[in-house]
Length: 165
Image (cartoon, rainbow, N blue to C red; front, side, top):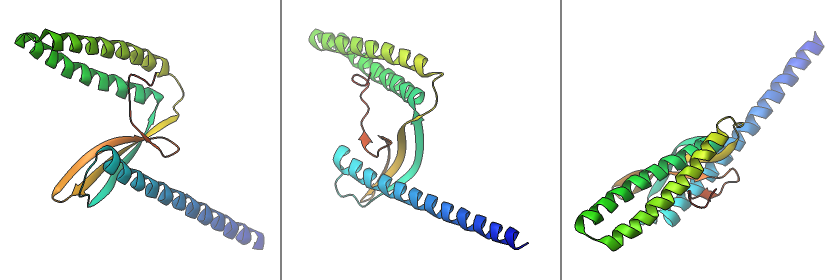
């Protein structure tokens, strides 16, 4: 009976120690995310008069999901440039239309590459590629929500669908 009691106390102590270490790791991770969020707001978004930031949500993104995000981003870019291209064509601005046509072709080529990446990653093992942070910043009376990527080694990642493949 003494062995059983000792074993149960040992097991309880180990589980308490493990959960304490795990909580400390989560706290340090959230602290690092908050630091990166402040850095992103001041350096990338260049928000002045910042009062505070708040991390709302942390998601994980694997290779397949990231490729899908890049495809969506390229589709948005393509739609915006197509609109600008049509406006240039209608106004008779052939030089701008020609430059936009080149950019649209580059987006299409990158889109094909990312589409192939989506197919290649579809059945790949799910491994962490990035954290996707959703956060708010408060500056004066303004509040705005934004998203950004963080690498597994806690560095800010700015997506570039043209150079990442």
